[in-house]
Each structure stands twice: as C-alpha cells, then as structure tokens.
Length: 288
Image (cartoon, rainbow, N blue to C red; front, top):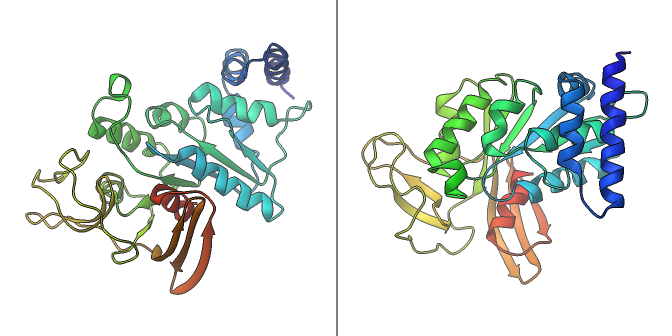
C-alpha cells in the first residue's frame, strides 16, 4: 500500500469532517487536498469499481439524472459511489471517491455514478475512464465561463476522445448532443420523447440551437418538447433526429408533482411514474 495514497484519503476525510463541523460542505477542499498529496488517486480508486462507471453530463438535469440512476442501482442492492452534492469538477469528483474509500485506502463499490461538469471532461477522463456517459442536453448557460454552446460541445467532444470505450447515451431530441454520435467512434444509444407523446410547443425565436450544426441552415420541427428539443431536421443537408431506442411514447398525465408516461424500450412497453414535475424531468427519467 502506498503511504501517500493513504495519507491523501485520511487528509480528505479529515478536511471533510472539519468543514462539516464548521457548517460548510467541504467537498471541493477534500478533493483538492487529496489530489495535491497523491495525484494518481482518482485513477487508482476508480479502477477499483467492480462493474462500471456512469458519467452524467449536460447543461440541465445532471444532478437529478445522476441521483435517479444511483437510486435505481442501490434499489437493486448495488454499492455505488456518487457525488450526490453536485460537486462536479475535478476536485469534487476526486472527493467523491476519496470520501467513499475506507481507511484501508480501498473502494468497495459495484458502480460509480458521477456527475461531471461539461468543461471538466477534458481534465477528468484522462484520470477516470467511464463505461457509460449520459448526455442530458446542451443549452446556453454561464456564457462568461463556457462561451457559446458549440464551444461547450467541443470541450465535451475532446473529453470523450479520452474515453473511446465509453457507450454514449445521448438525448436524441437535442441536435447538439445527438451530433456526438456522428463525430466520435464510440457506440451510441439514444433516448427521447417521440412525436405525439405530448402536445408540441411553439418554436421560440431565442432557440439555443436554431440552425444546423453542420451546414448552418435553419432547422425544421414537427414536434417541440421545450427549447430546441424535439423532432428536428435540416432541410438542406438532411441531418435529423435519430430514432430513440429508449423513448417516451405517451405522456398519459402531467400533474403538479409528476407525470405518468409510457416508455418503449427495445420493443417492450412500460408504464412509469416520474415523481418530479415538468417535461425536463421526463427527459431526466428516461435518460437514467
């Protein structure tokens, strides 16, 4: 056992405990300290996860989708490492593993469910290789830090190049995230809300992705769920929404506290209750 690795884990736990005693979360500091003491800590701890690592990325819905996925795995009796707090940059991801490790310096986990900030994929994936990556959506968000959505998409694309074996679980209704399947060699599967599953919303003039990512022609839609998400197609180059293998085919009822939906998964239908309100949480649920 490497003494520095043990020291890094013990120091992270001490920092986390100390911050909690002072009424602070302390997750980022715990990760920063662990990484400073032992730079290889994320690589070595993540390699101890027995069955697989899930990463959830995207502008909206990361924390909800990640926590849904973690809860589903735990309900199956699996042991899961998860950054529940949403600390999703490098230090926060390191902290999730360091704080979950035992005092013997090892992880006891079947899976890891890790939310990752879009701009941090380039820094995290060289250290931790995910088996699956869920992409929720891309919208303009924090322009001062990320820039335009196409710049964020490029960051994600570069990050995924560091994880060529990861299966990409992409939102078929988001023209930006769906394009990753065309640009990368990774295996991809798609989730989304099918046309006719819910009433279509009017097209907004302030869409974050109103024009084709390939030829810059304006998209046409025959169904819009919200924002720029929906059944898009480019009339010029033909880029269009891919078929969703994991699809919501009917929103039976939308309530203040959730929705009843019909899911089509590999040809089989399931009735599901989404216990959170609004259309975007239906996307989070089908993504998970």
